[in-house]
Image 1 (cartoon, rainbow, N blue to C red):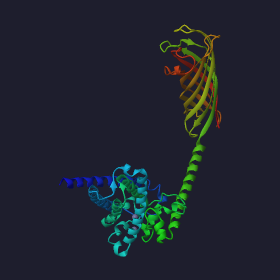
Image 2 (cartoon, rainbow, N blue to C red):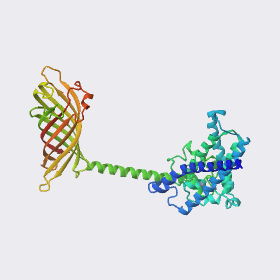
Image 3 (cartoon, rainbow, N blue to C red):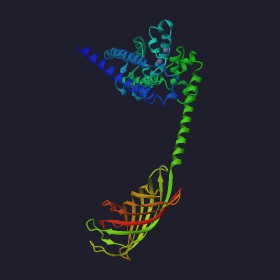
Image 4 (tube, rainbow, N blue to C red):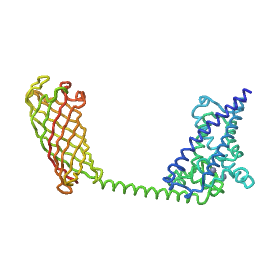
Amino acid sequence: MQYFSELFNYGLWDLLINSLIYSAVALPFFMGFWCIWKKRFQHRRIQEKQQSNSAMIKHELKYSAVTLLVFATIDVLLYVAQTNGVTKLYNQVADYGWGYFVFSVFVMILLHDAWFYFTHRLMHHPKLFKYIHKVHHQSTDPSPFAAFSFHPLEAIVEATIYVIFAFLFPVNIWALYAWQIIQMGLNVIGHTGYEIYPKGFSTHWLFKWKTPSTHHNMHHSHFSGNYGLYFTWWDRIFNTEFKDYHTKFESVQKRISLHKKAMMFLCLLAITQYLQAQTVELITSAGFGKPYIIESIEERNDLSIGYAPAFTAGIKYKPSTESKWGLILSVQYFEARAKGITKTSQIPVDGFISNTSFLLIGEKVKPLKRNANWSFIYAFGIGLSAENYVFKADTEPRKNNYLSLISYAGFSRKINDRLSIRITDGLLITDFIKGIHYLSGNWPGQSAGEDVSENLLIGINYTF
Ligand SMILES: [Zn+2]
Ligand SMILES: [Zn+2]
């Protein structure tokens, strides 16, 4: 009794694992080609118009389940034979080595292909066809689930080959699984109904021996030819290959390449249209900057320096002519004379401070309601600032690099379609994250604060 329950458990696990493998292989093809991207892949459809319907897919699923049940039953019998030591199945790869393992998978593929061809042709005999193979051929436009849609007797015929393997030569249990997955995969591709192999495949000196999806699909739509599973040689030897097989394959490929060309054209058109809508402006401004060196956050305006010349130049990118938002890549520079004593650390200052900032700014230009020529500007941005200080005329410049923030607001006036003038006032804050500036430069740790400069700039925008 215990032995029977062990066999029952074995069969149940076997059924579960095989069902999972079958689902993992067939479901992605079914979901991709038959559901989610059905329209997108229409050009790859071997039979242009879908003949199958949900009733047919239910039929395929039902008989696939029957096949998996038959396989599980045969696997239990094989397990009984194995445990009694009458099969040549083995568990340890090391018994024969990896070389033999790979070799055995190839041998199984070759033998299975021959087995499939001859038993398949036999099942097409008029006396047998209606009793056995008709179930599989009810799918004239097969879906991936037609791969295992067999009459129980056909399922037994399909399973017989691996029973033969188990008795014929040493087969590792995992090699058997590898072969099972490969044959399921190729079988599902053959029943997908969509061509996934490339142009020229059926006539290529090497690949012509492998069956593309069109090969078996034609067997389902025409019945009396293309009996092979993995390879084309048996059909060639016995002259059972459809005469129009290559023409059909290339006609599908023609549709695929036409679709590719059309997609390429549409893509180029979209890119051109997109690029045409882009606007690039040149922005240059000049004015005054008034820097403050703040030694501690608590005591603002530690050392105030007088107004100094400031310049900015940049390129503004707008995603379309109408867009109000634009992205500016710019560089801003100012240099100021500094003289005095800092409050907190009492450092005598007699030199200059220069600041070069590389900024990425989001700027919005909002036309005023009363006069469309006038617009309100506001912007926020981030960047990197390189600052030089000379605190005493005879000392080496102290250099530091900071992370910076910029914000400004102002007005612009349109002169013509390409040109406008602008006036903005804003703040450039460097070293806004404490500690960042310690990372670089030759003056680590000296400044414990942040620098703020107010910049009043007048300039022009030129649209290309
Ligand atoms: Zn058939
Ligand atoms: Zn088939």
